[in-house]
Image (cartoon, rainbow, N blue to C red; front, side):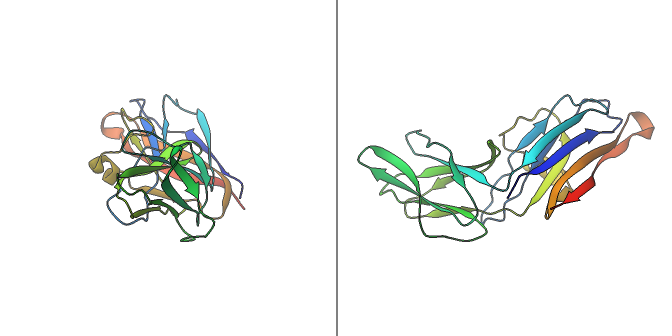
Length: 205
């Protein structure tokens, strides 16, 4: 499936040059922290920031020695195995399909935990640490993004739980081909209003 084309438009009265963070929440088991997938900086009033939301992923794994695999293309249903070969550690895509709504990474080492990271459009989307031998970790997402205004946050960084809980704008991208995300609100003093983020000018797939 082609990537969803999105265009952020700042129509707010923001006076603090706020950063805009976009992230996803996993449906996976366990307490997996939110990661700042996209951070939009210095986007002034009436400026735009186009970006894409691909339906595919990339997956990596890091061993206990600090060695990280190359990014491998991944789609829902793919299963990956982290193994020891004569040349060293390797991450392989398995032939058999797994959970059709998740990307799965299995640690098939005899010893040593691994960390797994999943990327979308080349940027870190989520990470699961300390996958023990003979254990699996699954990354599962719905086509939904969360968006909000923050300060001093970098792409790929873990979002503090308190900050993530304050970001309450959820935007479903299901069935969408392209759309604008328009930010309004802001200002200073007694006339200041909360920021809002709305999906407009929607083209459906």
